[in-house]
Length: 155
Image (cartoon, rainbow, N blue to C red):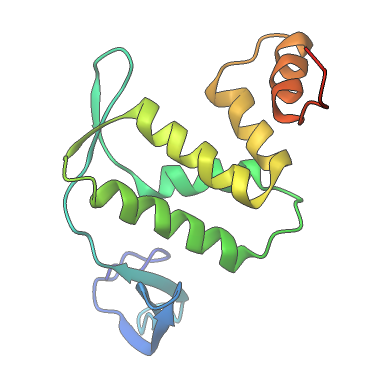
C-alpha cells in the first residue's frame, strides 16, 4: 500500500481487526520512510458495478462517493457513525446482490432514500432535496407534507 504522505510503496501493517460488523478489515499502517501512520479498509467486492446515469453516461460505482453523500446528509444528526457505516455496507451488499452489473443511478438513489428514511427523517429530507433537485421552498413543503401521516377524514 502506497503511503499517502510520501508515496513510499513499502508500508507496514501494525494492526488488523474486523470492522463494520465483520464485513471489512481495518488495517493500521506505518511508513518506515516518513514515519506516517494511516488506516486502510479491506472489503470483499462481489462484482464490479457500473452506474448508468439518467443521461445514459456510465461510470464505475464508487463506494466513497456514496459514503460522502450519505455523510453529508447525516451531518450533525444524532446517529452513531457505526450505524451509518452499517447502512452504507448494507446498501452496497444490496446493489452487489441484485445480479446486475449495470445499476441505474435512480435505483441507487431510491435505495439510499429508503435506508435513510429508516434511520433519520431529517437526513432523508436532506438527501431527497438534492436527489430530487428541489428548486424552491414549496418543493420542501410538498415533500414533507407527504411524509406526515394524515388524520382520518383529511383529504
